[in-house]
Image (cartoon, rainbow, N blue to C red; front, side, top):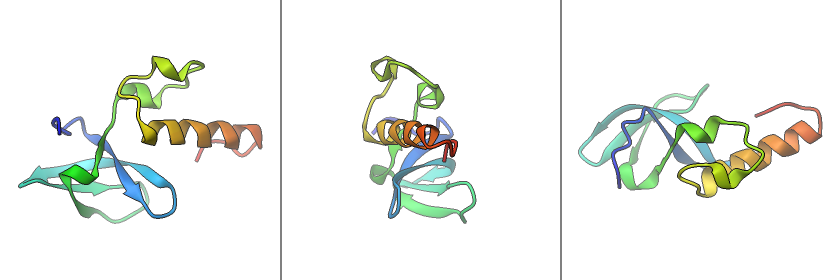
Length: 90
């Protein structure tokens, strides 16, 4: 896997499938990560998926997103669904 020291990564979630996390530390094939509002946790580097700054953009055409994969697609779909219901982003 490429270096995840971009300061963010997507991590598995039992309730949301993927969540965006901040990388606190990377060592010995493990990452210390923290999702907003949750305590830090340690995961294997291979469990995380790369984050790209384009994942934070509100794009009309998702094919313009870099590093396109399941995590940012689900986040974009969820944000659009919540906007349509008038509830804002999650």
